[in-house]
Length: 61
Image (tube, rainbow, N blue to C red):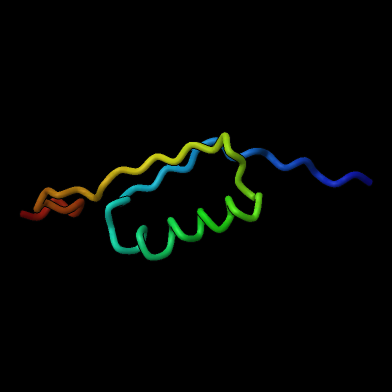
């Protein structure tokens, strides 16, 4: 029996990329995966900052 093929990750999108969690946890983890060879050089990283609007998704003002 052959091992299943692994699909290659081509893009990682981080919503709230300017936040503390991204800086402390996500980016170091992604860098670690890259250094271990588990993310290829073709991977694209995209980040969007958290919304700065005072309105929340609940619709309250």
